Amino acid sequence: MASNTSMVLNDATAADPASAGAAPDISVVIPVYHERENLPDLVARVGEALGVTRWTFELICVDDGSRDGSAALLADLARTRPWLRPVALARNYGQSTALQAGFERARGRYIVTLDGDLQNDPLDIPALIERLESDPDVDMISGWRHQRQDKALSRRLPSMLANRLISWATDVRLHDYGCALKAYRREIIERLHLYGELHRFIPSLAREVGARIVEVPVRHHARTRGQSKYGIDRTFRVILDLVLIVFFLRYRQRPLHAFGGLGLWLLAPGALILLYLLGVKLAGEDIGARPLLLAGVMMVLMGVQLIVAGLIGELLVRIYHEGSARPQYHTRALPAPDAGERQP
Ligand code: UDP
Ligand code: MG
Image (tube, rainbow, N blue to C red; front, side, top):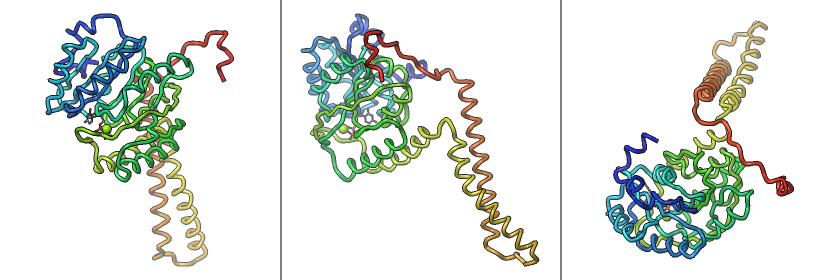
């Protein structure tokens, strides 16, 4: 992707001999922002967790414009570890873009994400890969922090609300949408395009592109070093994002159903009110100063405007689909004939 080449200052892909060899089985992608104190342990633990398995792996650490020397430290750690491939973004773009940059460089058949602060445990990775390898009916595994080690009020409560809302708005039923530890088949990652704050909604987006998702309990540790980048102020922004994404997921294909539905609910009673007043007027009464007249006129006007907004939305959807280079659907390999009874 051309626009992304310009945002990378230092990219291991071109020169690094590690990327020249055969593609590894697993690519672990970790966004890193001011995590210097965590990096040595993080890299060591990923190496230990995956070094003893039968799979080959690479660890792509995407430095998201840290100013604490994280990038230099990563470069240093990579000198003695051929499987470590650091990438440094030109500035701080946010977690979603950092993940996307890592995804675009990942070469593995399986792609795993986790956070750089050791709240997720690399020792959980092999079990996730084992599941993907043994279960052809699963394309993505989402971690479930069943014993989440974060503050209740500022972190766990908003996530709980978010989890409820997303699960209502989409057909993905998970306990914990926000767990960073996730494992995917490569095809799913290739179909996603993350930017802004979209990393929060990956399960829903993955479902949209056909992923079959399961949830597996994973370990979760409290952050011991460095600071969380997300505080209560972010929570409010996330709530706004949620409104947008819920609307987007539910009504993206039919904006008329959202706006137009609301519009009809205003237009119909508004029109009835005006009809009633017309009747009164025809019966010879004076309706000059009635607040009901004002309400009726307002409701009709707002209703019409909402329906028009819905129609414009429909137009945008059509134009998008006509002119879009993004595929409208994805296919999957047919199951082997003897595995036929697996299918529902
Ligand atoms: N992160 C990032 N860019 C940002 C903010 C965060 O790459 O602008 C990384 C951060 O280094 C960590 C992950 O995203 O690896 C999640 O961030 P954090 O642990 O602060 O979030 P929390 O666990 O508190 O939700
Ligand atoms: Mg964290």
